[in-house]
Image (cartoon, rainbow, N blue to C red; front, side, top):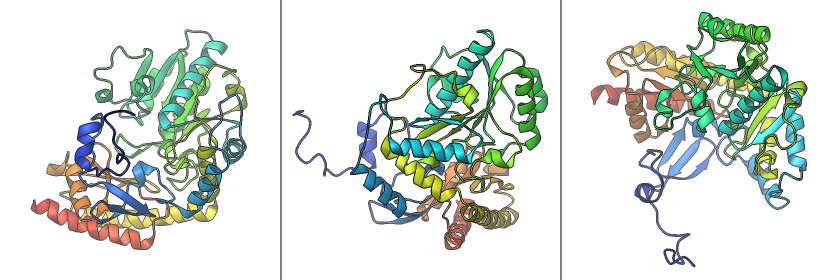
Amino acid sequence: MNAKLDSGVTTRPVTRQTFDEVLVPTYAPAAMVPVRAAGLEVWDQEGKRYLDFTSGIAVSSLGHCNPALVEAVTKQVNTLWHLGNGYTNEPVLRLGSALTEATFADRAFFCNSGAEANEAALKLARKYAHTKFGPHKSRIVSCLSSFHGRTLFTVSVGGQPKYTEGFEPLPQEINHIPYNDIEAARAAITDDVAAVIVEPIQGEGGVIPGDKEFLKALRELCDATGALLVFDEVQSGVGRTGAFYAYMDTGVTPDVLTSAKALGNGYPIGAMLTTEEIAQHFGVGSHGTTYGGNPLAATVGLKVVETINTPAFLGRVKEASAKIFANLEKLSSEYPQVFGKARGQGLLIGLPMAGDFKGRAKDYTKLAEKMGLMLLIAGPDVVRLAPALIVSDEHIAEADRVMRAAVEAFIAA
């Protein structure tokens, strides 16, 4: 037995300070430590209750500890956990069938995260281009302020230099254009481009919806040059916008779609969806993952899909969205010196800071947290709201009350 461990290690008291002592400092988590949650409610070590309007960064869309998901995964835990990828399993076959039936796709590849899903999509795009057109067709076009993951490849494709500093040399043949800039897209997307990757709504970049004309132009340019159009729906997918996937409301169908976050409601899972013809360019052994598509993750994913992808559920998302936008419009009109006009779609919403308060989104969310409301930021200038899709009218009213109290304290501070 390791001499550094003792018999009480599993019950040893831990605090926020423990993070600073034992974990690599890649995050700066809040002072409070959540220990229990149900639905949209979270309790910390001191027993204080919070209303969660983050859903774990748009992940727990059916709420914390959702009873139907708990039941499904508990049953699977007692049935089959894991198999090597020399075998398949029933849950992943059912989930793959459900996703291909619900979308444009014919084939699915499962992994563990959004970054891995995007990594697979980008590798597939280059494989497809090299096989079909030759190695000269390798360039990838992305957007400035985009976010596609933290692997070296995906962080290079993401359009935020702060995430690549110190990791050079970076993968080559990657270019970035301004989001929603059709002329820049026309200049960049030429015959040597293998893939164009875009978020239908930029999340980390400030919750900025993609213009339909921009997305249509990308589709047309990809068709003209033979490039693949990849939609990163890691944050916008699985009901978040009021459609099962955001592309369904754009009039544009991608060649490849990536999904994660809400697909597992907190259980790690990612998916890459594509067509039959494109999928064939990934042959046996060309890509893989040890845990991807394991029975536990696939079981949760299937229950999530079955629950969210119904007209009634998605209709309620749009209804809840309208109520929150109405509240934020009033908030912005009453405090124009603090907030700009809310933007986003469905329950992925950004509230920009205004005037002298630009750059202080984190300060505001910290105040709200002290008052019992958990919020996100999307860069230093934007407060981000991404509540569980099961958010009630009572939750919406409570969040509005706390946000108002927080802004009063924010101004007075």
